[in-house]
Length: 283
Image (cartoon, rainbow, N blue to C red; front, side):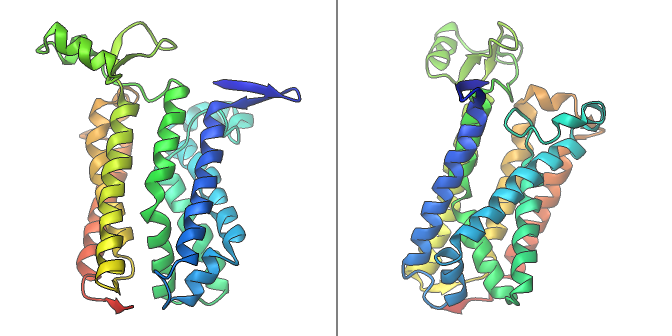
């Protein structure tokens, strides 16, 4: 949806949320680089301070192009095959978490492979980025809400057991919401639910691990925060798929298209958590 027009160009609310998220990422990553948390990793500190502009550009490229191409290839190939000109219209709608994760990993890995970074440094960099990823996710969910997309199941069909008073209370708290651009049905506000689990719960888990291991225990287990993020996010998104109406048409046998990827995320994250649990580095 359009927020305002500037010099005859429309500025979309969705795009504004992405812009704010990149600014937040820049500030927090720079703060981490300037702090003493990563004193034993001068390459990471350099990447988060002197090379922060390059790093942010790579994140933007990975998120925007990876997220968009992921959405096009996974979810709506038929539509975009007929509307090729809209593939790069990232300010409107249609971004894939799966796509931007792959895009960011590839963009950063290729860049620092050329700089001959070791595996440990690369994993610690990904840990730093993913530990604050929930800040970006909540802003993107706000963008989804403003765009009136990712709407939930209908309340009267799935919550008949709730009393009118509870339904009224949930509506006043925006847990139930009418997406007017869709219809006049009272629906579960999946953006609200997703924002809580994908932001608060993920930030709690990844933030706790960073505080506990890096700051309190003075040890770093390279890749452990990344593994926790991948496994936890995959688990959360797997179950959130069941309350999203837009996902109901994507079932392929037992699961939706997204759920197959999130099963892979959970397995990969769990495997990495198991294999990296003893590879600690004293700070």
